[in-house]
Image 1 (cartoon, rainbow, N blue to C red):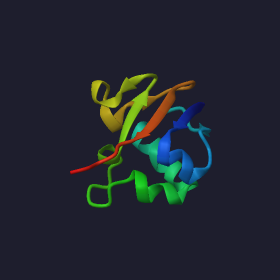
Image 2 (spheres, one colour; image 1 turned 135 degrees about the vertical axis):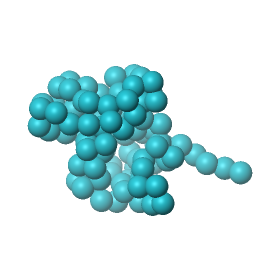
Image 3 (tube, helix red, strand yellow; image 1 turned 45 degrees about the horizontal axis):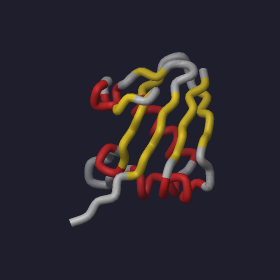
Image 4 (tube, rainbow, N blue to C red; image 1 turned 180 degrees about the vertical axis):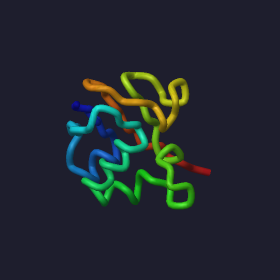
Length: 94
């Protein structure tokens, strides 16, 4: 099955791509798909994955088919063929 990942802002600049298609087995969670993405693009890990929490959510807004993952099953959302995941960086300030 194929899942499309779209990268915006700094994520796009780090990997020099706005979109990639990830080939996966029949059943894969969003968490597993993101892990595969950072294996393919190790430089993305530093800005996507929070080092203390080992979680991408503090650093990004994640949409699956246009829905923010908090209204789905979060990182445990099951992905299916043709799904689109959008990763949008979050800017923190204080």
